Length: 214
Image 1 (cartoon, helix red, strand yellow):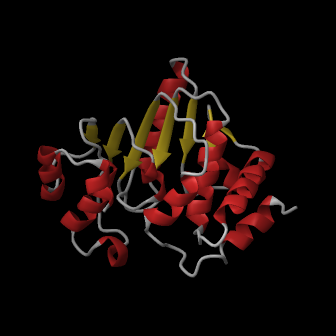
Image 2 (spheres, rainbow, N blue to C red; image 1 turned 180 degrees about the horizontal axis):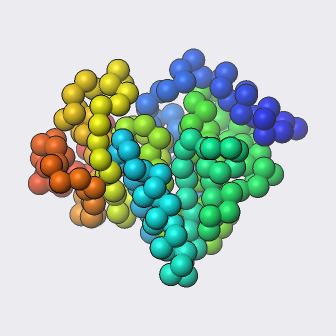
């Protein structure tokens, strides 16, 4: 039986890539899980301000009497901080049990460290009676692992030049990747005033989950 440190160290070795933006692999495993969807899902993408947006929403909703799950990255002190229910980090036992479930389902499918932790978060959240789930995108949006769940509200915080070798080398390309969390006929909140043309075009064409994921 692996402890949490062993699990995390091992997860860094099983994929040839530390970042592998591809929803096909992680979706195959997700489909085997009995994911219990909360009543409401909020997905947050952007360059800066994602973590603080999660924290503010989390506080408002909990104070209003809702049961709230939140998934964020990276962690500050302990991995457990990434997966919280009502601001309380998940226990090491819960996380290790979730990793065991994923490993039994994974077989020959490779997963990155982030994909492993995302699936573990979904398993843990399914075991709780949540009203709202808040998901912070790890990188980009369109092909980020959290985007396998359709959100009821998407939020895009401010956008800057980040991970240009992966997301594109100009602001409109990066904005397009981050706008991949948007869903047809679902509201999107944009956290800045001069909205990029690539996002405006999508707002007018009502993007669908499949259109956006590729």
